[in-house]
Length: 287
Image (cartoon, rainbow, N blue to C red; front, side):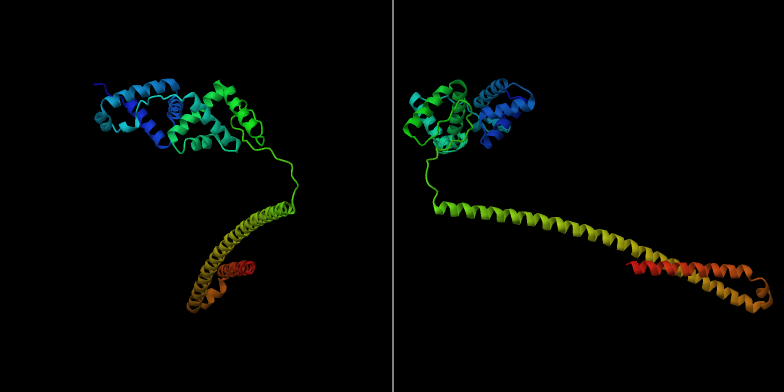
């Protein structure tokens, strides 16, 4: 019994994920080839070899984490000539109404995703290999309906198709509707611009406020530091004065004759205290 390699299992799971996202196998093969730098045809051939193993032993495939129901070698049923012409005509009619190719195929397939993908691939294949077939259908539709604009399907199949405009007078109602539409447009633009201006102004205010708070916080820390320094100098001064009083009592004459250094120390403390009080007052006034 043939077994699946890990590479085969990874490819089968990659295909399952793509099919669950409503992707065609052709798209899945292309994505896998691009991801692992392989040829799209090689990926397709390798996949169908793995599918043969899955179909031969579904229980084994399930044990490998593969869903056998999602992997079938579909029997290719060709479109009949009449069906192909009829379906391509419907697709072109929908495109002439401005719909995308995918939406047109989906409507023609009556919500059958699988058939819609086949129709889409067939349309693109015809566009590439037999564009005149589609052009003939478009010309036939045009002859039967004079309101459809003649467009070349050969040049670009992504063109949006619109009916030709017939000449008619503009009514007062049309003018009113146009005017009201312009008014609404101007109003919406004005509101949008106002909203942007308010948002910008709000951001500027918040930025200025944050800067002010940072500056205020810095000044508060500075004040606390100055107050702490002032308190320390005050304590030193009180201790010095207390020491002087004690010494004065013990030896009055000695203190009076040798107190020049002490007086200098006291003056220095007083000067620092005065300077700190001045800085503290200035900082508080700034706040």
